[in-house]
Amino acid sequence: MREASISAAGGRRIYLLVSDDESKPALVILHGWCQDSRLYRNLADELSKDYFVLVPDLPGFGRTEQMPGTPLTSLSSCIDTVLKEFRLEKAFLVGHSLGGMVAINFAKSTPDMVSGMLLYGSCGEPPKRSVTGWFWVGLRNFYQNVSSGGLKGLLDSLRVASHALLHPNWSWKTFWLATQGQIGAPRLNVPIIVAYGDKDVYFDEKGQINLAARLQGRLVEKKGWGHDWIFLFPKEAAELIRSQLGN
Image (cartoon, rainbow, N blue to C red; front, side, top):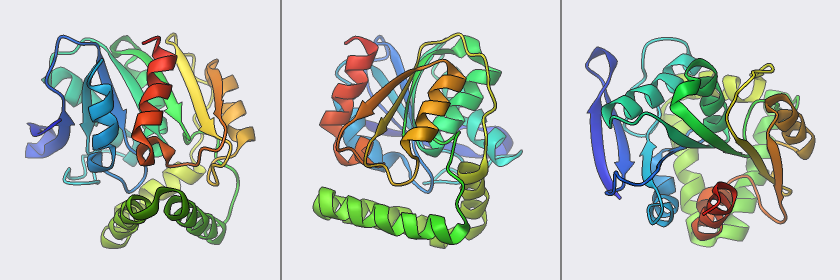
C-alpha cells in the first residue's frame, strides 16, 4: 500500500492508502468514527492480493480536512471524489461502524457506482443510549480491544481516543450522526452483506438484524468477534470479506 493524496472541493485534499494493481476489481474501505486509514493498512495489504484497494481518510479524520455540507454529505462526497480521480466506474464498499452509514448513504445517492457492500458493525440502527451510556460502552470496547488485541489493541484505541479529544467539534457532530442517525428503508439494487460480531458492545444483534431487513441484505454473524475486529485481526477480516465476495 502506498500513501497518496488527491484534490477535493475548495482546494482541500483527501489523503488515502492505495494499492498498486488498478486492473483488479476496486474495493474501498471506509473507516469508523474517529479512525483513519492507517488502522486498516494491514487489512488493505491482505485484500490487495485480490483487489485494487483504496482506503481514504474520510473528511475531518486523519489528515483529510472537513468538506462543505452536512456531516453525512461531507463524508459521502469523499467516495465520489476518490472513484472519479481513479476513473473507476464501480467499486465494492466495505464500511465499518460509521463507515457503514457513509457507504449506505453513497449507495442511495449514487447506486450506479456501487457494485456491492459489506457492512461490519455498521451504524444505521443504533440502540438508544444516553451520552453517558455510550461513554461506558466505549470503555468496555477499549477494554475488549486491549484484552484481545494486546499492544496493537491498546495503541489503536488510544489513536481513536486522541482524535476525539483533539477535534471535539467534528467528533461530536459525527458521534451524534453515528449514534442517533437512522437510514430509513432505502431500496438498493446491489448485493449487501450485513456482518457483525456477537461480542460487539456498540451495535447489538437486534439492530444488525433490523438493518439487514431494511436493506434487504444478507446477515452474517461472527462468533467471538468484537466491534473493532475488522482492523485488529486483519487476516481473519480479509478472509471474511473474500468469502462473502466469492474469492
